[in-house]
Image 1: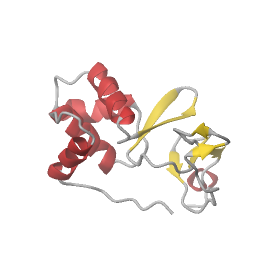
Image 2: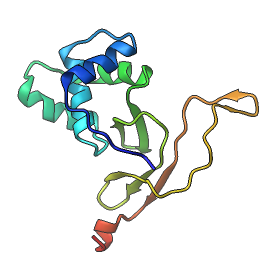
Image 3: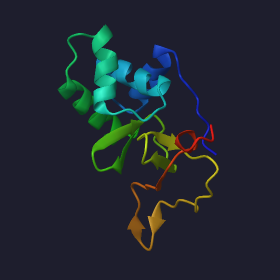
Length: 144
């Protein structure tokens, strides 16, 4: 089961960046904070729309570049669950997701039994694991 912990202090976010050897910037802090507080697997457009209000000078290029740096550092994960867009997840550890074909929401799955994820398989080094389920979510089918 994936435990969601929301980090609210900027100091904690700053420490996460520093532990990865990354320079601390307001853009990196704000993007990490947004992802941490909005566990809905947002797109770059979602993040840009939200941050533009409080940081009018931020650009989509800055967001793309920052997310790339955060992903390479292992602080966020990228989801390519839909061919139309890339989503971002504040939880970098491998875990399964569900994509609703009706409303396009991406949900974390906690009750799915996943095989033990190994760092090596048949002599190959595993760097990423993706497990996606696609269908109609409970909300769209009227069950929630």
